[in-house]
Length: 317
View 1 (spheres, rainbow, N blue to C red):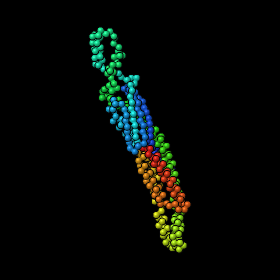
View 2 (tube, one colour):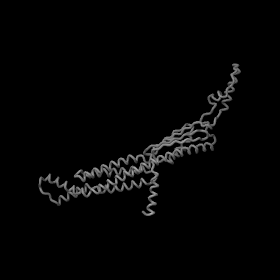
View 3 (cartoon, one colour):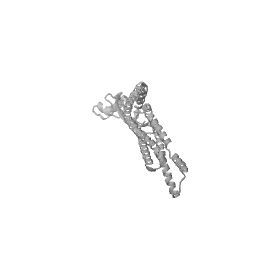
View 4 (cartoon, one colour):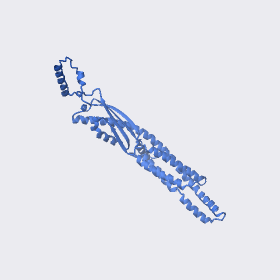
C-alpha cells in the first residue's frame, strides 16, 4: 500500500469514527447567580429530530435559546432536556420592604387598639406571605445580567450535550463494527451464490428434459428445441444482475458508514434496495436439485442479515 492510499484510508477511518448512536444520557450540575442548576439530557431513536424541553416557569424566557443549542448539536432522534433550579448557598434573598412596612404598620395599630405587649419577631415577619420574593424575583434584573445568566444556562446544556455525544459515539462505534461484520457475511454469501450460478444452468436443462418426457410419455425430444427452452428458462431465472446490484449496494453502504454527518436515513434507504434484490433472487431461483436449493438457502441468509442491519441502522443518527 502506498503512502497516498494509506493516508486516504486514515482519513476515511477518522471520518467514520464519529458514527453516532441516537441513544444517550448525560447530566450536569452548575451554580449560576446563586442558583443550583441541574441539566439532564436523554435521547432515543426517532425518524426525525424531536426536542422536548422541561424547565421551571421562571426560566421560560430562555427556552428558545436552549432549543437552538440542542438543534445545533443533534440532528436526529427524540431528545428530552430537563432543567431544574434550586436555591444554592449563595442564592440572593429579596425582601419586599414596602410589604414589610405595611405589616409592621398594621402590627403597631393592632398593638395600640388591643394593648398587646408581644414583641415583634424578625424571623416571623420574614415568614409572612410575600415578604420574601419568589424564584422569579431572584433572577437578574438588568438586561446584561439576564444575558449572562442565559449564557451560563447554555454552557451547562452544552456540557451535558457534549457528554451525551461522547456516549453516543462509543455506542455508535460498536454499532459500526457490528454492521461491518454483517456486511462481510453478506459479501461472502453473495460470492458463494455467484460461484453456484454456472452449476445451476445445466440443472435447468435436466429439469426441462425430465418434465417434457413426462408430458410426451417417452416420445423423443428435439435437442435444438430443448436447448432453446432451457436457455429461455435460464434467462428468466438468471440473477446475475441482482448479484451485481447487491455488490454495488454493499460497497456504497461501506462508503456511507465511513462518511460523516447524518447517515442513518441514507443507510436505511439503501437497505430497502438490498432487501428488494434479495427478494428477487428468491423469486427467480426455483428449488431444483441441490445447487439451486443451496442458492435459495444462501439468499434466505442474506435476507436475514439485511433485516438485522435494518434493525441496527434505526439507531444511527
